[in-house]
Every structure is written in structure tokens, then in C-alpha cells.
Length: 126
Image 1 (cartoon, helix red, strand yellow):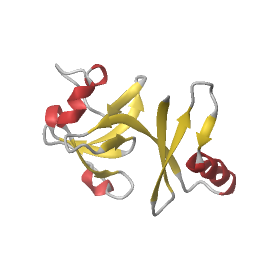
Image 2 (cartoon, one colour):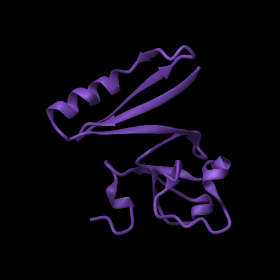
Image 3 (cartoon, helix red, strand yellow):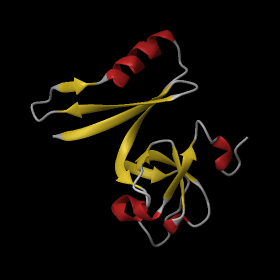
């Protein structure tokens, strides 16, 4: 059984809830996904994000929208996004390290916030 986790930004708070896909393709849980579907019908002030399934150097789970730094990223901060069919530091040019093909590279990084609660952590943030 593979656990696929989502979190939901509701304009002023982050909600966490796992959605589990079972081997027979039945969905268990899914409170956040149900809330997201309901919200999209009511308003647009929410964002649904998925877990990367990876952890940072402190053992914290890395999610889309998290801001990470350190390791092969140096001292610059990057937002995690889903791009090129994988989770990736947005705007990062990998040089010699292919983070998308080498998940242990994320284990050298550290989560310092997320783009909703801490947008000032990104270079050029307004």
C-alpha cells in the first residue's frame, strides 16, 4: 500500500491529512481532497499540495511549496515544485548534481518555511 499525502493551504492555515490508495484502488480517508473539491466550488483561496515522500536533513517531510536551503543548493533558498515529472527546487540549475535522479540530495537540505507562511524567504519576494 502506498500512502499519498496532501496538505491544503486555506488562506491562513495549513491542514494535513493523508489519502491512502489501497492495492485494489479504493480510496480511504481523503478529508482534504474532499474539502478542496468543495472549496473550488465556493472560492479560489486554497492550494492543494502533495508530499514528495522525501525528508530533509532533520527528518522533516518535504512538501510542494516548502522552502529549502543548504546541501547542494548552497546558501540560496528554493521553493519545491513538481516539474519535469518529479519534485524539484524551482529555478535551480543542477550543475553536476541531478537532484531529481538522486533523492538523497534532498536529505542534505533543510526546510526553512513554506511559500505561504514565509514568502519573504525567497529571493526577490515582495
